Image (tube, rainbow, N blue to C red; front, side, top):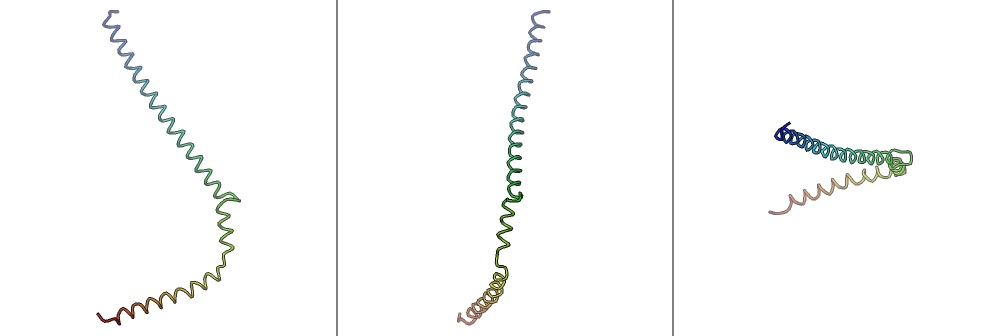
Length: 100
């Protein structure tokens, strides 16, 4: 082999090594991303499990809502809604009666 052929071959090998190095760095970045995504997924599943487990947040919310006085709240709304409409009607009537 001549020196030119050897040099061309070495340049070719160097290019291939550069390509391999670039590919390996891309693989490393992708692996980091995958590990981060995996960690985030585990974190989300952990949050979901704390929500739905028997002593979790949703069961506590359900227990709290079960203790709400629904009949009293219903009567408050039955009383408040007509009062609000009455006040609105009086307000509109006052605005119409005012001289312009």
